Length: 230
Picture 1 (cartoon, helix red, strand yellow):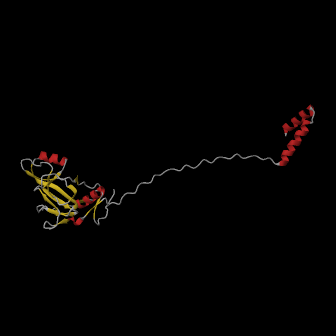
Picture 2 (cartoon, rainbow, N blue to C red):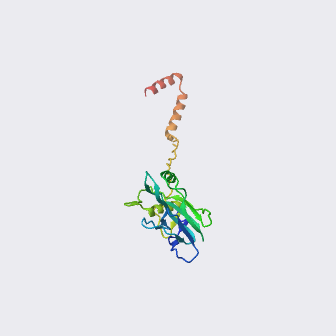
Picture 3 (cartoon, rainbow, N blue to C red):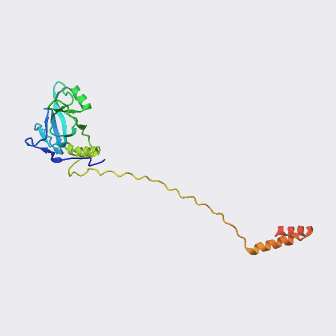
C-alpha cells in the first residue's frame, strides 16, 4: 500500500453560503451523505443538505435511502455506502441513484451493483472514481450501533493511496519479506598424505637386497624360509 499518492484536504468542505468559485453539489431526495471529506455527516433525523466544496480533489460517501414496495407494505431500504472521489473545478452537479429502486426486485438488482450518477447542470454525466465502501477484514470497524464508517473509509483510502492531511496510516506498510536460503558448506577435499620412510630403513632395505642378490639358490631358499617364520 502506497500512501501519499494524493492528498485529501479535510477542510475542503465549506458552507453553502461561500462566496468564492467552487463545486456545488445537490442530492436527489433518496440519496443521503454519510461522509464528506473525512467528516461524518450522516444524520437519520435530518435531510441531506446541498454542499459547496472547494475546487480540487474531494471525496463524498453516499448511500441510497428510501421506502420501497415490500410484502404488501413499504419498507425502508438503505444501500451499501458508495465512495465518490473526484477532482473538479467550478462545477455544479446532482447525485442521483444509478438505477431505479422502487420494488424488492429493484433492491436485489441494485444491491448487486450499487451505483450513483453525477449529473451536471447541462445534463452531462461527470466521471468520477466510485467504489462500494468495503468493510475492513480485520473486524475492528464494528461498533455497538453498526459500522464505523470513518475507519472503514480510512482503510479504503490507505489501500487506494489517499490520505487526509495530518492523518496517520492505520496500518504501517509491510516490509518485503526476506528470502531465506541454505548455504551449503564447501566440500572439504582430503589431501593425499605422502608416506615418507625414514632414511635408515631405506638404507637397510637396499643393503638387504644387495646381500640377497649374492646368495646361491640354496641360500636364498633357506633365507626365505627363515623370513616367513619371522
